[in-house]
Image 1: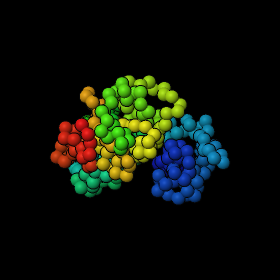
Image 2 (image 1 turned 90 degrees about the vertical axis):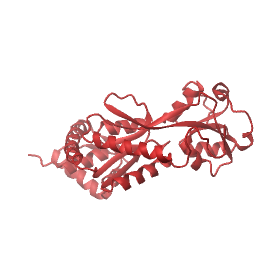
Image 3 (image 1 turned 45 degrees about the horizontal axis):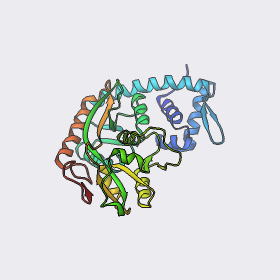
Image 4 (image 1 turned 45 degrees about the vertical axis):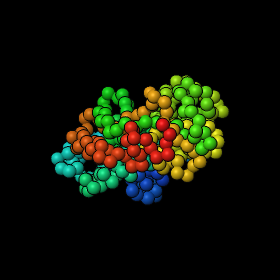
Length: 314
């Protein structure tokens, strides 16, 4: 009998997910040498290697890929048992793994964490920031309890719970503040700065402008909204950002902000989780709490969509 433990499986799953001993060790809350020892012990128990250790890259062996699939199934079953127990507690307690997209994380995450900390003091919060596709993979793989994303995600096995809507706004050079606001057709002809591929907000901006996904090579892209706004301030072009980002991203840039012409583009931010998650009832309660807080005060740093934002031209 091979004495493989759940801890072995969790360490290996983290290593397979990160493909890096240091990041996997940090994720597991142990030192890198300790993780290496555990992986070596697991391979000794199995009498076959699980990973190929290169100078710069770590790859799973063929057996490692097969072993990973079975390990993930086992871990999902173990987590489901734990979730059944947690679901019996009111309010929810224990580890809470949630993801959030980068175009919402800096602006909404502090508010979300504060809300949970006040109403669910027994939760051990484990946030993760990643693009939508990575978060969906984490949900389907059982590595996340819920995720905050732009809806819809159109994944049949996931439940979608809307939280609030927000508009996109135009960010342009400060000297352009008094110019007419361009419509979507004119905006398409301007030098529009976008997030790099993989961000859903990029696709939403392109959809509003009616622009193709294949853009000129000289078009500048950024990895964050902060980068885009600073590029606009330097006179590189114009960009679109979600309204919740205005207060933070424009305070240190020489830019002007304007509402776009109707029909104004917008997005719906919501929570998603597996339909089979035993915590579905508690997640619904959390979504309702966050929705109610939004109705009472609005998200931090912006006003309601019909009121106008400070310094924003209609």
